[in-house]
Image (cartoon, rainbow over all chains, first blue to last red; front, side):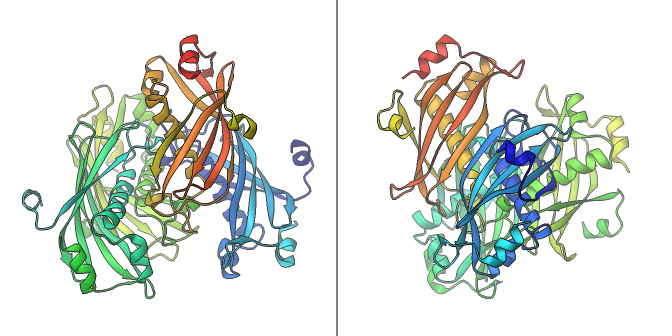
Amino acid sequence: MTEKNDNPVFARFVTEMRVRPDDIDLYSHVHSSRYLDYILAARFDQMERCYKMSMQEFAAMGLGWFQRALTINYKRPLEIAEKFTVETGIERFLKDGVIVSFKIFKENGKLSADGEGNYALIDMKTRRATAIPEEILKKYSI
Amino acid sequence: MTEKNDNPVFARFVTEMRVRPDDIDLYSHVHSSRYLDYILAARFDQMERCYKMSMQEFAAMGLGWFQRALTINYKRPLEIAEKFTVETGIERFLKDGVIVSFKIFKENGKLSADGEGNYALIDMKTRRATAIPEEILKKYSI
Amino acid sequence: MTEKNDNPVFARFVTEMRVRPDDIDLYSHVHSSRYLDYILAARFDQMERCYKMSMQEFAAMGLGWFQRALTINYKRPLEIAEKFTVETGIERFLKDGVIVSFKIFKENGKLSADGEGNYALIDMKTRRATAIPEEILKKYSI
Amino acid sequence: MTEKNDNPVFARFVTEMRVRPDDIDLYSHVHSSRYLDYILAARFDQMERCYKMSMQEFAAMGLGWFQRALTINYKRPLEIAEKFTVETGIERFLKDGVIVSFKIFKENGKLSADGEGNYALIDMKTRRATAIPEEILKKYSI
């Protein structure tokens, strides 16, 4: 994965966010589960802003994205009210989904977490994975 | 409100729950926002178990419950992994909703929080408040 | 409260935020509990940025803020990925805390929710409410 | 991992839980991030109930558990108010932590999610990983 990231095939995008009070856990760090929502929030933002196709546009086409699997490595915890960035990009296309890798960076620029997720494109009527339409493939292949 | 609770008109029900790790905040207490989800979780449980009409049955009738207002008083914080109970009951009916009072008790039996919420019955097609059907009024008037 | 807000004694500040995916509930609205975290996040931001005294500085002085009570009125729901603003300001000082009123505005400028909270200043050693030091009173009286 | 699970070296334990309203996402499923908190909640419960050493006892020894990495596969979504079980067990010991595998089962007994996490034992003074004390190793080797 790192080799690919050093010389990525597809564009990588960055979203700025900030830790909210309820994200904090008993160790005064961000709770491990919240990183998953940060990644999704970044994808929602980037789908609209960078790929020019928002979640609402997918929904209007009767499509949705379900998470199939995720691997995350926690390197350095995010802290109270910290500003951070989430970088994501497509690693490769599956017939019916995408592999997205992500890196979360702390305010000081150091790596907080990285990993990758497998997302299925869902036909919301059947609630089953469906082939990615050509039109979407084009928008995403940047 | 306390006078009414000492001699309530409508039945009061109790749900047992437990604090989850992500509920904890920077003070190692349950975060103030989580109490609102505990109250809703108790209502969902009690609607099904006590009033014999689950959220899913409301949904099947094209109805939903939206929260219109809430007042909560925090007395003693809930702590890591603490077991607690949520007691709720209807205070009075509105034309298009209900006033529900609640008390959250710590594992040691002491009061953690109390207050009351105003919930509107919603016609999910129009997304507007609607009069409570006679059938539901009967189920709820216990 | 509205009279005071029309002509407030103390300064009011605004924080911009955005709905995260996990904030959404079964009605595709922001879950009622999340508004409480938005208000706290706005206060954290404004304490640092506007009052020039961050939560970390309070902590360094052995002080914390506990929520004693909150009343919230929900007017119009926040939606998926919506950008919104949280305006807060001090309504009045208590001997050992503050009454803060808030207004949450939707992206279209309409009111989403309003209400007020009662926050106690806590001596973290005793975990009891304490009188507000003159120095903090001055910083907050803007 | 599956081979080991069919014939595990270490004991596996089960915790019963229930989906809360705020766990639900825009697809009326449990949000992908919440499964991580369910796993932790199950571990907290099992540490106390099964291994006879609660999180609070670890804290009293100046120790904590930080999550180093996690892989999760989502098979079938958990739904509104669903009752489910979380089975966890130690796969193997590291010098300074443990690999824990988990399976989440739906109310109907079908697999909802599985995977494994890597947890470091932390000396809370230095906030660095530390060798597992013999006494804890013994309690965990059941």
